[in-house]
Image 1 (cartoon, rainbow, N blue to C red):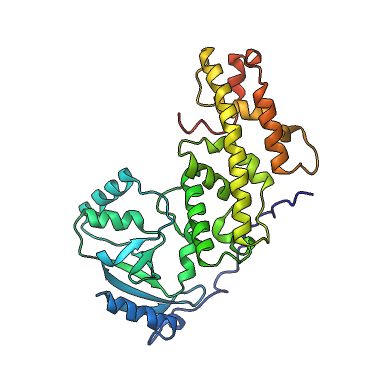
Image 2 (spheres, rainbow, N blue to C red):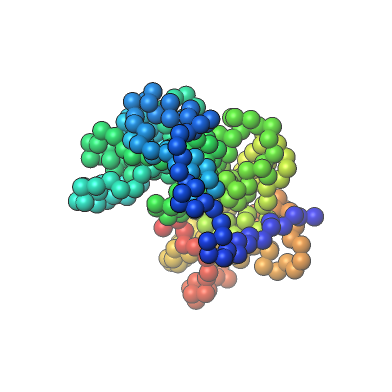
Length: 320
């Protein structure tokens, strides 16, 4: 029986002034423990600790520091840099003459610092020739895995989200592959994104938007060790890419018949998707992909009319 993903519920709105610390409680006279070690790392890197405090919601210690810009790098599993975005950001910073939005930084495993959510601001400052950059230094390195929750400076598309998730996943496997996959559900967001990430690694022009709703419905995080679970995601990714090859053949035939639309792939996937007719518990993802592959192989393009595209729902082809 397929295990359904749990329903996500937003936390209820709390009563005003009932959670966290008051202003005076946020005062931190001197960092201790992991925060003190982070302060030492700042000094060792040639930076300057400007101040320290407890953040007002959870009371975790934070350092406000100025770091040499050469001492900080984006986490290695972030999305690719957007050239247009960081140049536009550099123009804005240059016009105001002020850098007012510190990046978040954590101490990197081999020295220096990582930022999980400041890649474009960091690159913009480098473009302007800055010597240093202001940062909120977090003592807990686990924040590095929370990139999807923290990175809000530029909206992610599906490809970026998927690639970030698979990079985080491989980083987790490298640290300790024996831990259960379900432990990292918060960091990875959706099990479907892991499989799509593998697809995008192997085929950068992959049109994942057409397959995302199917994978999201049928894939869930398991209690299997990461080393086992990643092999399952890679197996399913291979099945998806094999299906995509057959779908691409159908799309090509439709184009040869004169049909031009960014929704051709979505139309074909929707026509061969058996889930829309299934009531109750759906079959396993592997069975659904096998059925779709068989339907794609015998797809009759002659039955598709131009007016069918008018009612097509779903994302446009990414390559379009």
